[in-house]
Image 1 (cartoon, rainbow, N blue to C red):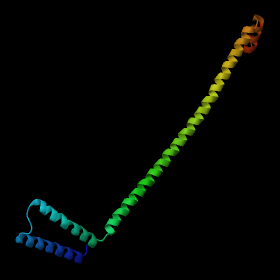
Image 2: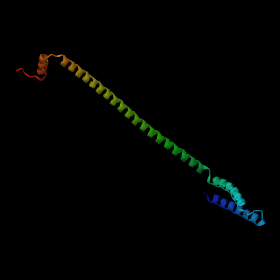
Image 3: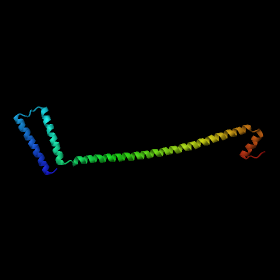
Image 4: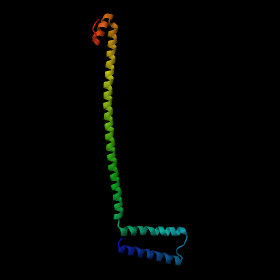
Length: 145
């Protein structure tokens, strides 16, 4: 605030106080608290106007600009966080998909092994005793007698 603005503000305050003092001494101002609050409220409006006028409205605009910048930064942060979170989710989904594929391969291997086991069991049941001995010896490379 410049020196000129300070002097003008002090003069305005002094004139208001003198005016209130004169009105009080003449009996126009009742000292009841309700009326005093109304008068002080009525004086607050021009005071705020003059204060903003002398200070300039740039302070208010600067505050608004700061708030807008903070909101923009917050939105950028949220967007970045959301992108990172979405990336992690995509990675997890891909990992789950790969694990499901591996699980399907393992399941198919298990089914194939079970089918082979059933086939071998059927073959063994259908073999006579001599063929069973020969197959056993061939499988374990034993020599007869």
